[in-house]
Length: 192
Image (cartoon, rainbow, N blue to C red):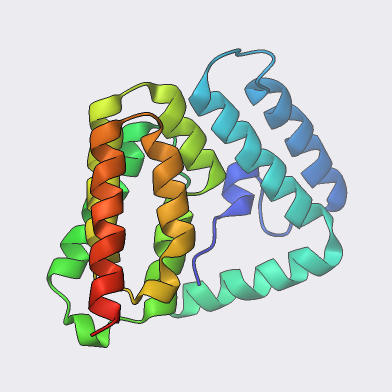
């Protein structure tokens, strides 16, 4: 269970009061609001994280559930995840995933966890960061790496991922053909 450190995002202690949360949110939101930094994708991403942290911590039920997950992750020694802020961060996450998969027996992979991880990499925020970066070569690398990461997944796990990759490919004919070839291969292998 991957979670973000919402307290760190807002710069407050886990014992912060509702009033402290509101003050921290107001301060951080003003600093990172997209209107004060137009066109800055990193600032926009940070603002969305700040809003997400505020929405969870201000609601008592969500905060209690979050605190439990936070406590659990800390007891098992798991680090908090951090949102990617640049297209290069996303590419690095893809590289880490494919490196991990290259050293794992594909018969022992938990399909739900892998597909969930790939979908997280292809989140709306990350898709926006990649598309706005305009770095077509980097985007193509991301597509290739994630197609490779999909190899162990049975076909039923792939349609949503494939749809996101097609969106990411945009008008790039070579990438669209690569994705189509991947689909045909997966369908063929699943029929065996």
